Amino acid sequence: MDFALSDEERAIRDTVRTFVTREVMPLEAEVLRRERAHQPGLDRSELRELQLKAKKFGFWGLATPEEYGGMALPAVMQSLIWTELGRTFVPFRFGGEADNILFHATEEQKREFLIPTIEGERISCFAITEPGAGSDAANIKLRARRDGDDWILDGEKTFITNGNDADFAIVVAVTDPEKGARRGGATAFLVDRAMGWRSEFIQTMGEGGPASLIFDGVRVPHRNILGEIGQGFTLGMEWIGKGRYTIPSHAVGIAERVLQMAIDHANTRETFGAPIATNQAIQWMIADSETELEAARWLILRSAWTVDQGLDPRHASSMGKLYGAGMVNRVVDRALQIHGGMGYTRELPIERWYRQVRLYRIFEGTDEMQRLIISRDLLRGYTKIGGHLA
Image (cartoon, rainbow, N blue to C red; front, side):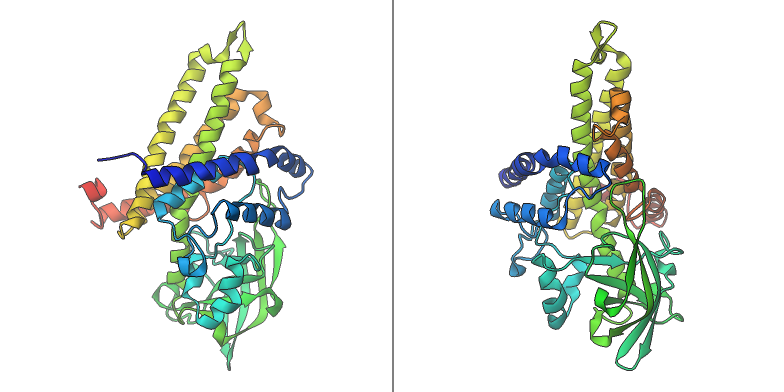
């Protein structure tokens, strides 16, 4: 059993680390200054400029198929890259990407939605969550009613990432209430903002914020159905599934960065004539953080490896998401404690991460939903204790 990275994995990982260190991290002071002034950390043009710089490094469309100009990287490699991006709080992501379910589009839809999104000309958002349907995504109520060659959408979506900036939304709506969402009663639609939906900003404890999307008699052509009628819930679960290993991969990068900050501070901060690193209380916080970080790293890489092997990744990714989200919250909390009062100020990014990572235990599947999936798989015999090594 070999736990080492391949030469190719290490080379790609190191190139991403170099790019993040040289091009992204130098922006951190300005991002913090802007956010203290209640401004976006990066505007759209600045993000685009960084993405084009990354393209010169060879990074464009990490998960995008090669036929669309992407790299088509395996899940393990994507996980390693997301970890590197987590080492900075600058809101940067590589360009050339599109929602994974957009590849189910027709050729006409690809020209109108997929290709412009990959090229960075359009911004999308995925809308399934509603005020009464979060973890219980099958309980969506937003209705799509057939009217000749069109569908009329009425209802509300909420907590939609990119909802304030998106040019179009991928909206999962109820098309057959009798069947219910899980049994083919929901359908996905590609809905341009120009068709009449509006977004309302939601203020959260983190930086930036999601949106509520309001649909009041929005008319959508039948040709804008993504996939097949009744396939909406299946596509929605496919979209959510990818986040189950990318989000905790990002969490590993955050934990690595804040743990190093805690170690550096413990070695230089003196109280009562000695560095605080000489105190057992500090040593144990650092030891516990490293142990949990390493455990999370391998759970998450295993879930990505499961994807690459063509195995059902749901059980492994639920364990990775559950443990990784909890781990990063604990590590950031300890780092803040080690920094004392300075950790609590907005002069350092630790309190920013403290607010940011609290979301990791909620979105793309709450801790409670991950526990439900993991226990259900075992109780119903869908998987064995020990997974693929059982």
